[in-house]
Image 1 (cartoon, rainbow, N blue to C red):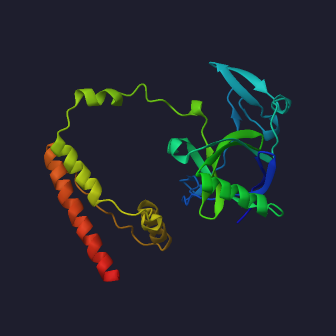
Image 2 (cartoon, rainbow, N blue to C red):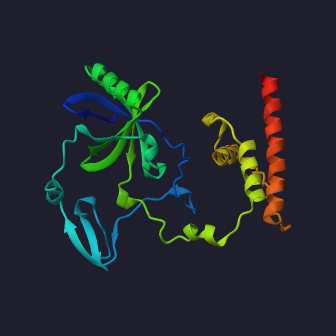
Image 3 (cartoon, rainbow, N blue to C red):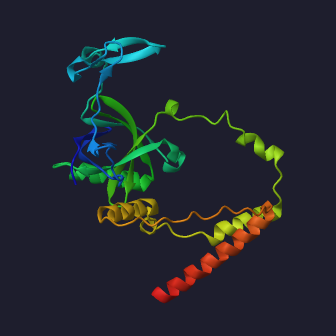
Length: 272
């Protein structure tokens, strides 16, 4: 696994040398834009509409638009003047309970492995966090950008999740959800049926059983086109036009979930 960053976790007066690696990757299918006439890839051109000319990379500067079409230019020395903490340290600020952090704050996950000579303090920190069931709120600077992060124990190693800062998470004050319960009456029977659906569809989380079906279908189309074959057109299932009230929909959903639960048990008996 490729190391993308080396540094240390600052834990009190203890430094834990670590190596940082990405824990996830997106299996996106990449496309290139082609000129439809000749099927040749097109290039992105940096063009100035005022000067009516292409702009070479060395003539580009960064500008901040503070009013409509008014910019202030920031140069390398401006960014260099910003005081940045060590780019080689993950500074632990607080230890908190994991359940206190809403997943909305999480951005990207990284594996933290001990660097040479850091095995003992790494294990010490991992054991302390596991025993206290706490996670570490920290800050890390990579490529001159400071990020908030949480370090937690996962199985036998430490992982780090970069996080949004509080002012980056949108509030729900402008939504009407808070006032719904005062205006909408849900009967005990409706709630009971909804809970029954949840119970029937409850299972252990097995991430490998959830496939990206859209990606697979798209790959099948690409392979078919490469082979010069005709792509089969699948008809979209018609939208249910029959109007049902909420209670009817709940009852139908319970029946469907019970059928699914029965099939799941039968499948386990066969494979077991």
